[in-house]
Length: 75
Image (tube, rainbow, N blue to C red; front, side, top):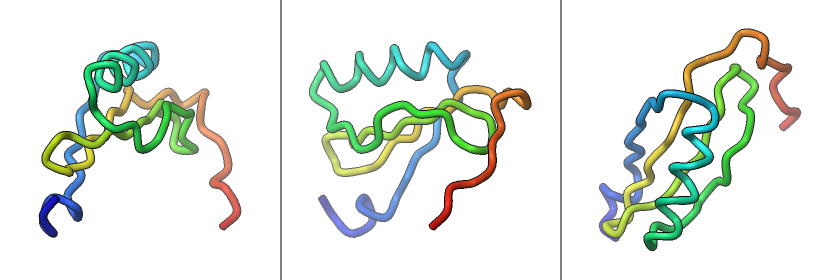
């Protein structure tokens, strides 16, 4: 991958939390590298990251659900 691709994350909003999981499975089964498995992000969205064949990271984000928000993780 080139430097620009390695520093780029392209974000896609998908229709639902379940769609994040399904799309992650579909994309990794088709050969995309799984970078971050789907998880419930502290801001209330379901989120995952895959890497495309050119080395770009692709974020998959559901709509935000205020009831799914939580405290950010300790870092």
